[in-house]
Length: 155
Image 1 (cartoon, helix red, strand yellow):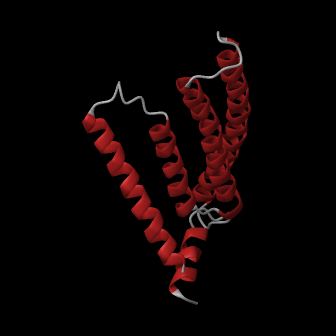
Image 2 (cartoon, rainbow, N blue to C red; image 1 turned 45 degrees about the vertical axis):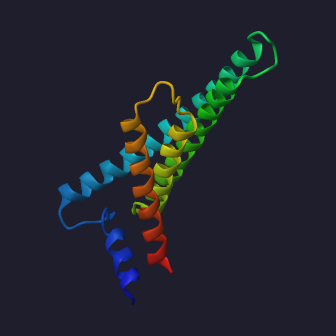
Image 3 (cartoon, rainbow, N blue to C red; image 1 turned 30 degrees about the vertical axis):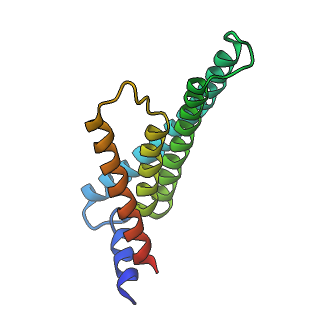
């Protein structure tokens, strides 16, 4: 058994279904139920988000000039689309956790990268300070390096 297998086995023991201590077993089952409730709520958020995308697109297309989108309209639509995609990624994280009792770190980092990328895509540079943009760039760089390092570990 190599080092990666040992690490993954440790993660699988984070919330075992059976435990010697009845209190710990009860708490673990409670957490699993809570995670399932979160999954259900995330599906509702995704459905609500799809409705929001449709509404935003409809609203933007009905403003004069009808059926034409300005750059800010396109960016607002992109933001709504990406918010739904991020919610789907979070749902995938939750379902992986439900199935395996392990937090998929690489997927979590990828989701964070997608979320910060969404922020960058919809930046309104007229409203932002240079320090805010620099801090965002630092977060993007840190997440990118983290994702790259996690990817190297798997090889």
